[in-house]
Amino acid sequence: MLRQLRRISDRHRHGHGPFAHLFMPYEGSDVIAIDCETTGLDSRHAELVSIAAVPVKQGRVLTSQALDIKLAAPDSLEGSSIRIHRLRPVDLDEGESVVATLEQLLDFIGNRPLVGWCVDFDVAMVNRYLRPLMGFDLPNPTIELSTLYQKKMRHWKPELEPDLHFDAMAAALQVPVMERHTARGDAVTAALMYLQLQKPVLN
Image: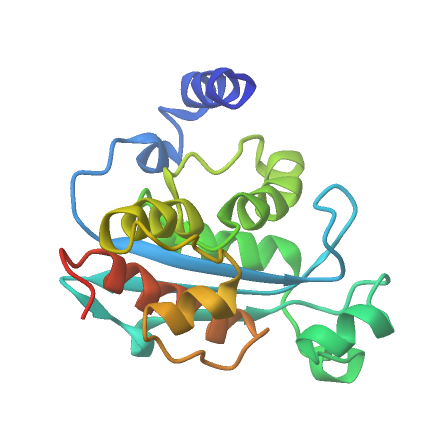
């Protein structure tokens, strides 16, 4: 409810400005698979390290058109998160600023729906930077892969209790896991899972 009210308020304030197109209803069939790598799992305190967005159009994952951005190393980048995403401060020496990253991201995704595994976390991470800098949250519709997967599996294999972990979902959907725990790899894998979940029957 709070999110809906905030979205209505954002649309009222920004619906006629330079970002007006973001608040228009999307009428196409494309989606954007999105993934963020961060310094932690609490979106209230974690910081962005990298972000990737991959278009899915007409039944194809357009990896050649993917957006893949590494940000300048935040102060909170330390061992526990580095062991997961394997991005060290030296790997981020030429990383983008937050403002430049947000500008590129908004231009790239437009008003297309966002799909991902734990997509609310990724959106919350972006919004933590976006609202203070630009005055609004991402207005894009979101599609949670695990929810879509759970519904599909009830139809395809009702006798099974679905495992909603990322790797387990990919295996069940016969999707290769691409460069796990990189923003681009996880976004591509999410996009491939999304395509599998559009099929009427799982092969």
